[in-house]
Image (tube, rainbow, N blue to C red; front, side, top):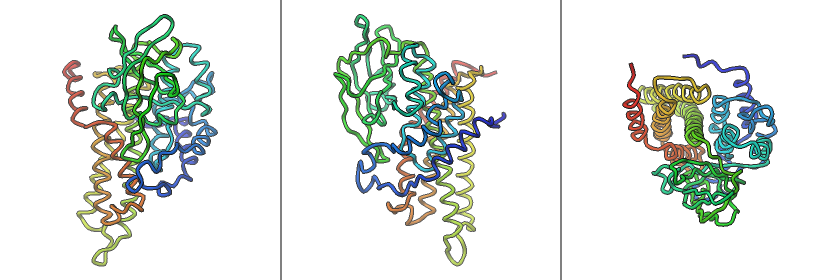
Length: 377
């Protein structure tokens, strides 16, 4: 298994490190003290810098002003963004525009893609269903009415819903197909209810009541939602990896300086073993992430569908990021619970990512079903 990155992928990661270098996670109010304190808007100046560095158009083809790169490059950039808890809809907007490019009509592509790559249009995705526990595509119904589509239903915990120009909403038709509808939050029949994540960011409960959209704004292509869902999940695993790497680095630095009984606590066997275990978690998270991103990118055939690799990556990311921040808080002692110390925000964001990925047991069950349907050997 070769995890060597191409020159273009490495250049994207290097550009991301440059853009994110000035972002200070500890400069943002703690959500535990003031719910919604960081939720007024996403970081627009940072968004403009990402656009100027061509990092919002990574997945777009050259004809749309993009770099023509792949999911691996996007995950490398997302990994860097999570290290500083960058408050931008980079994952959602990039994944949504990539889905439009892959499955949308010519008119929609011409209208949307270049503008999204320049950061002029912000997209997000409603991917959590009505309750956060049921499939997102079953939460909204879509029916054709002449040259329009009519949508009804509710999607919960939509990230950046109050700030995005378009929300990509999966919806089920009477023919049991899933379409992707690009819904403007200000359209007639659209309502938003304020919600907050564990990270303090503002989410939206998206309510759709007889919302009418033109046929151009609805993508009716087989496999579009499944592909977008897997890209979102893999990108979330990349965020978990970047966050985990930063937290373990913070913990190692603290343990090497904090002295107890006249010695740095990093020299104590119990501390060293915990850090080593968390390092193993990170390496497993990394290996499974790149495998999933490669399968999505290449479409390479395997014993299992790409969904199997995504499920494995989600298992490790969900469990791994939780273990890493818990060990970090334990080894930091009182600092781990201090809301004025940046580790507190990393813990809150880690919990948000863990909940977004879903429980490892559910992914293990899904993986078991895939193995049953596609026996190995």
